[in-house]
Length: 228
Image 1 (tube, rainbow, N blue to C red):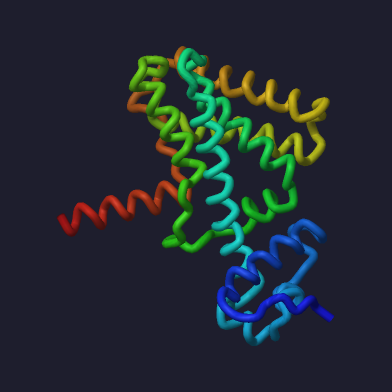
Image 2: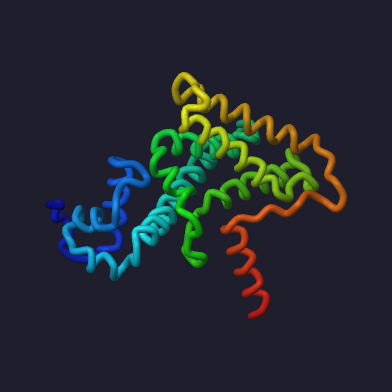
């Protein structure tokens, strides 16, 4: 018998809360929409008014979680950007927050990045990608990163940080505690930035990388241009 905790109001939010609890307890795959409904204390038919399937619930949960991750990264970057600090510390701090989040909540991280395509109109704010963009743009503004190296740099940083986070979460790399993970993340981000500063851009430039988020941004820009 599920715990009847839902009385009125935000059933959608309650189902998302229940789904996240189930991920913590059973992993990213071993639970169902029916179990989430039972935990909230409603019938599966009531849940179907908000989510047509377990996959739909998972995609909505991934949107919520990515927004939370973006907030953590943005807060970490802002706190690191103290007067007199290394100008790269904002980006380093954002990377650290990403790795820490993955290691602290590996099941939710796996579900989030393995959930498949999300709703193209779903609002993820701040998006982790945008946090990286902001920090890299700041480095260009202050002259630490060249304009020529900027295109696609966020994908290079993301690939490095996500790769480290995944390898650590899967146990393929072992480090002694969160402090060691922080230091390794800093070394990795600094190495990527050093490499970007020294690279020679091929003609006619690096291949343009895309993600679901950047494609959504591009659609929004085209829509805005069409109506202006």
